[in-house]
Image 1: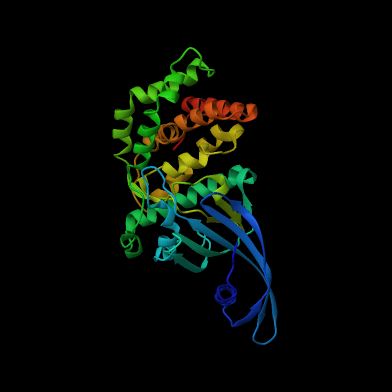
Image 2: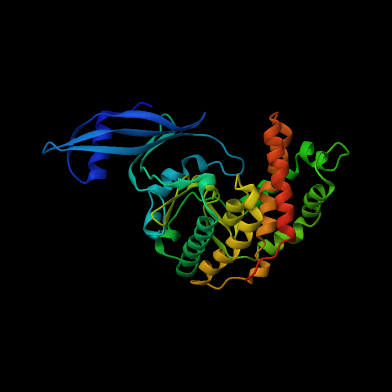
Length: 338
């Protein structure tokens, strides 16, 4: 990662709220890809009065890319950090502080210099943490839905509420996956296959039910790796997919997207009521019995997991996707208490 010394000095001055004269730095990758890189920048900064301050900062460099149905998502985090959305967060749920954001229009890329947060994430999250994340998300979305603050009204470049539906219809239109589910060669148990076929056959009715739910500001990538738990609070990273969506979309992601497969049913039973409880503190919510989270899970991930299964040659991954869809089927037979 190419780091300009003058930019680093400015960022560190913002972080420490004092004048930084010089700084050394080392960078190690946190995430990497063809269109973006995330690195941890560490070192010592020297203040005007000679103090040496150790630091850790995240640098995210995002290049332009095209996402189906959401072409401007590549620059969304830049646009959101340039907005006043940060003022809507609470101490219990927020995003990392951004010390500096910069767009390079010639290269079609941007930089975000972000707070480094050390905490529990991914599959290390416990059931209690899942439940708390659902509760705090419900509170956040309910408060915004009820109050409609100016910061929310002024946002630009958000994904559309129809993104989930259109993505499902796009996946369903692929004959490879669609035909495989219905073929004699399908390796999945009959009840799992039928679960996806039933969703397809009743899609219009299910989508009509979902579209009666409140439309809220969704993160849309609310999975365990994007949640960081520390000191009893949550920080949420990676906001490039965020936009308008239906109540419960993010909970569907929390439960099913690369989550703790063995505890999916338990977490479903815990998170849906917690989420509704949080939302209901600020706004009226539909009855818990009509939350549609199970249907949202299948619409968002059913075909996706089938596609992953067909296109991986890793036997362990194949077993994981089959196991995940089996757990989603078990969710169908579970009950959520309001």
